[in-house]
Image (cartoon, rainbow, N blue to C red; front, side, top):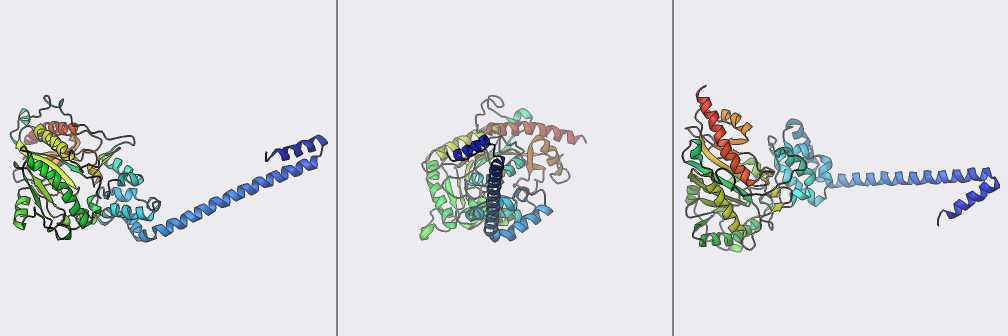
Length: 432
């Protein structure tokens, strides 16, 4: 009833023909509105001022870092990390969140030539820092804003009822490999792990390895580099330096990651060799790395002619591992399986073969092979992995480049079809 009295006064004045009173009332009303507006403006100005002070105080610790971000953005516009990491966005997070976001993005600033330049530190980072990660991820993977990852391993309708035989493409036995990256929900991702957490993670995985070892179709051994567990507990799976080098030479174990400046900046290479090692099946065809770029790199590899054999075995192996109590792989509703690097999100899968391309590599490099493979959706690497030379006989490693917003079954199909198309280019190059 707050305005009833004012309305009655106006009616009384109107009835009496008192125009001066009416004018006075109108002036009072206008004054009230002006005062209300002024009060609102003052509140807005004060709120903005407080916000700026808070931003300045919270961002002060990282001012130098953010200056570096802007410098790298100017010199390296293709660096996606600095493209999407603005000062305003960084300062919109709480001090605690800024500490994590700094760790996520530090490698992109310290390595200006990065094409991506960011790693998640915890399984929830892609959600917490969605304003940063989502546009970066969709830019890198060439996806629209509505794209959502779908997992599907059913390859029964791929090839000849699920069989992908390269002999039908005129090829003989190939070295084939399919791997996925996986991380457990209850641990930080490798870039944010302490030495103690790395060891605890390794001990958690021992239950899964024991189950595999007890299964006749797997068997095998665990090879660990961890000198000792927490509180001086002995590591029963510790191997010698000589054995480690033997496994590296056989391409079964990964190398010290400290030499990789990108992983080192991201904290992923910290505390070497604690929490690092691998499980290897008796036939050496099913391997699980632990403590690399992702907590787990699970892979199948063999020489053969049927691509589906490594794909199908990997699928079954993953089911065994995740069926064990305490083993739950981290996933995202939008991005599928969570990985440290946004480039591996979704399937976390890389399916590859070693194939000879002597005509496309006759200059001794893989430059021509990469030019031909890229439009086919294929990546080309050296036989020892990324940034390694090609084989003396022109052997290269090829794989589909897609990881996210693509189904697992589609990756293995793309590899099969890609091999066929690439061999057409290789044969055509022989006539040039």
